[in-house]
Length: 151
Image (cartoon, rainbow, N blue to C red; front, side, top):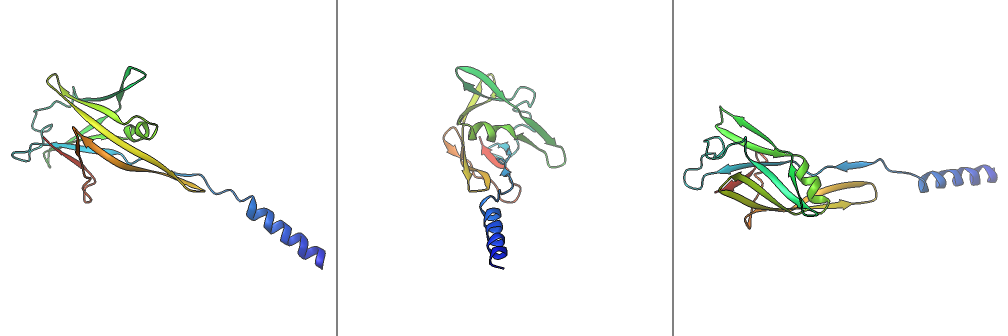
């Protein structure tokens, strides 16, 4: 009986010690950005001041210019356009913090984006510590989860 209890205890201890938690990673949240006119609160992309066809976000890695994948979605009912990027959070978490938002041949804004990787024993999450454009920190709206850049 003692041998059975000892064996059972040893088996349970081995299972507890060797337990591997599931791999769980919560990816960096997508960046969703609207560019709004400071004076009349209209959407500057939807209104046509900036063309979604020519807008890009880029950064430099080892002195080589690289572009961030963007998707710009326009909604004719809401009269708004939103710039989306799923990729930029991963790039930021890997170490790149400074980006450039090319709006047209006259305007390029500087983006600072800082994602931090947090890990516990089992799971990894990515937290946005700072998102600013031209030194002005942007806050994410808690209703529509968009960042608003007033220009």
